[in-house]
Image 1 (cartoon, rainbow, N blue to C red):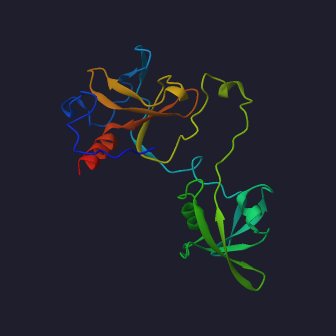
Image 2: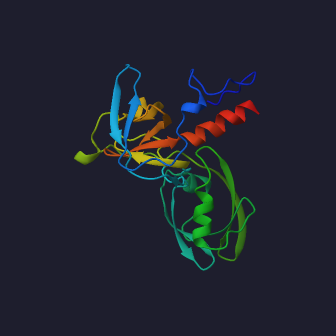
Length: 221
């Protein structure tokens, strides 16, 4: 849910002035502290510098294995209960355009498809034999099977959404997926981000504070 402010917000939020926000690149191996709802803190270190995480697991699910075929992609096989099959696509259909735009090549089509989220409806132009056709399909959410490897079995498990972020970094902070949203502070007590997602047993995704500042400034207009 995204809320809209009725009037301009004061500088910062929750009583924290932006003068205490650390806008710098996170210092590798520097200590971090996550404030939990219980009032306790979790301690960890900075594991990486900032980077972007294109949508992969959080992208809409088309339900088909696509392979490059010339300047397009073709359906190799489909999930029988996936959106592609249920919408009427068939194996060997060549996908040419996505919402009226023809990507430059096969990888371009795949990258364009990954920009759409679950429950969004897209229109794909495709070739079946000698016929040129067009069909709408509503993407679904990706369903992951239960964890089976010991490395995947930890409290809370992975976050349902753990990618599709613009500027983030990894930390070994043990913030459970159900506690994500916790503010993160550096050794000097400066606010430096939010634990936005649990990626794996050893990695929590930290949203860089500059992204939060941009969002707050956007609310202020």
